[in-house]
Amino acid sequence: MKRWQFWLGILISLVFLYYTVRGLPLQDFGKALKTANYWWLIPGIGVYFLAVWGRAWRWHYLLRPVKKIPTRVMFPIVAIGYMGNNIYPARAGEVLRAYILKRQESVPISASLATIIVERVFDGVVMLAFIFVNLPELAKLTSDSGFIGNIQSLAVWGTIAFMGALLVFMLAAMFPQRTEKIVNALFQRLMPERFREKGMSLTRRFLDGLVSLRSPRDAWMVFVTSVVIWLFETGKYWFVMHAFPFQVSFFALMLMNGIVNLATTIPSAPGYVGTFDAPGIAVLAAYGVPKAVAAGYTVVLHIALWAPITILGAYYMAREGIKWDKRMRDLEAAE
Image (cartoon, rainbow, N blue to C red; front, side, top):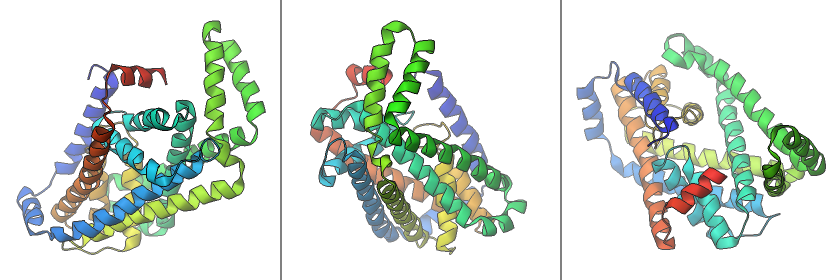
């Protein structure tokens, strides 16, 4: 709480919450929550855990060149990472799962973080693909849908950023020796001498985590797995929708999924408060869903995405006897 980034995230969340509640008929919002059929959350949560299992399999696949670890071992670590992202700021869960993997399987943290960054890049590419698939439909909605009108330009710039990052990682994976020479030259110019050896050591371990991208087949497999993961997650959106009195197409929910998850990359309060809700409500409102119903659905969906995996991750973390103590904070700062 002493870091300025934490308070910046709080401020951004408050701005998004303002857009969430502005003009919201609270009485109708309460009615939407009271009349919802919450039994639909059960299959939704089940499909979501299939997506989490898919993430564990994808991480296992990316780490194969470093160490072969079964998916059943990765699943609890991924759940702990989700829990960390949901309750700590700055996506600290990513560092947390890299730390646990090192503790359990002796995988270098730098290599783990490399694969985690690759995961996030592929996730970003898939989210943008979800948006681009629906661009013709989105074009019909942008005229009177608030800040959704900026999504097309956001998708273009986002594509440049994520595809650029993916290209850099793939080139670094395919030409590790050349990458080492470039990084070493940069370190010689920019880094104090006492840190250079440690920096190069971290660079080599980081490059080890990118080995999976050397094979086009492996990179394609990671992409396809990422698409399946996000389709499962969209399946949860679809199940939860049936708890409320509105219907939109699965493609509309793909669009919503892509937009809200891109929005959650913006720094915010822990749990993506506001940055998930405001864009989600705006997308549904653009499809003609009453704002009170859209808000009720989005809030329930957000809680259903947040609570089960956070509880499961907390259980696994308690079972491992891990605490977010000073040593782990020092580790986070070092990495």
